[in-house]
Image 1 (cartoon, rainbow, N blue to C red):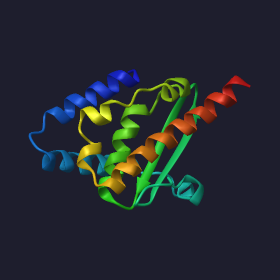
Image 2 (image 1 turned 180 degrees about the horizontal axis):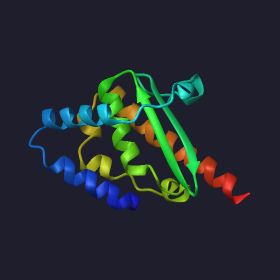
Image 3 (image 1 turned 180 degrees about the vertical axis):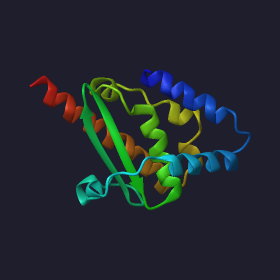
Image 4 (image 1 turned 135 degrees about the horizontal axis):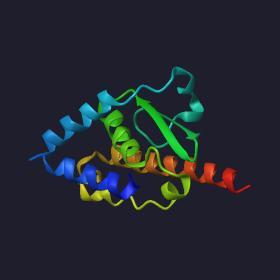
Length: 141
């Protein structure tokens, strides 16, 4: 599945809900379903800067695609990172670097988050793209 296909799936999924309370409940469910990050990756280096809550994000290469794991001490934030992982996990670094993350606006996520959580969301996307850029650069060498 391409990044665009994953994003389309997420948009369609969020369109099924009538209001934002239902969407928040769905985000919480996604956070609960997120596979736990290995405790060894809950380090200062893996903390996403700019998030109000603590969010740990780990990325590694598996073959020619990236795999992400994450956790957060806040349930909504954990759900948000779960959505980002669904969009980008299992993709090639160059595809992640070039990904248009417009689906975030299409599902209305940014506008329905507090300003600090919205900033955290932007930081999550930046960090995932930063990891992808680092892996892409390693592969070019």
